[in-house]
Length: 291
Image (cartoon, rainbow, N blue to C red):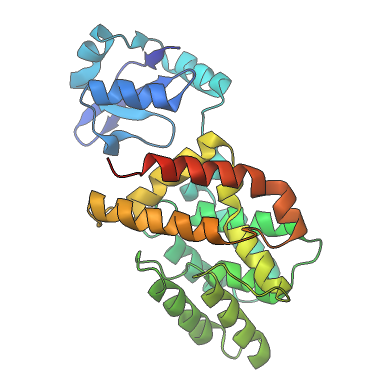
């Protein structure tokens, strides 16, 4: 296991920056960065951006010097590299095409929604999450009703980090923007589904609700590394909340999710994500135990 750094050749903010990576573990990378006094805000998904003035002392502390191409190769080989499709800022075209296919002749509305999903305070609840939910829907059922897909687009369209209120405001936004474009019964169903993502607790007979909720929670059943990235991004989304308050709130969220039996309501969701989600949730909950 090693930590690598490339020469400071990337200009920004009046200086040049290096990239600091691990070839095996983000935990190792975070540990090295913490010991070196590199702030967590310098972490960008799979690497740290460090200013030129830190280059020499980081190499003295053990970071191995490599050229940029070699650093990229090492990061790809490690399996830790976050691909372009998982970077929110690179998804506009793919998502706009999906919107145009879902609701033709409403391109401007699609752009308005994408601008909301691209707001700078979003880290987890971003375009990356939107695409992940849309793709998860496709894994859960061969045919997804238009109302479910629209609810996916609107379910975090308003996001200020206020649980419950965000979902309500997103449902109201759907009512405002979709009125006259889809039928009234469809619109009521979209609003109902958006509001349901506040609790993720659809009734037994609510198949469309189960599909949307399972897709929204699919990240919980991801690999350990993906789950760690999700947890870090959620913390960034709630950066305005003090640490102790966040930990208490996060524990409550985890306990509420674990109380949902089953957590995933569709047969496909249970097969795809349930076992790993149980492990991920309990591991995180254990890490948040009071000292």
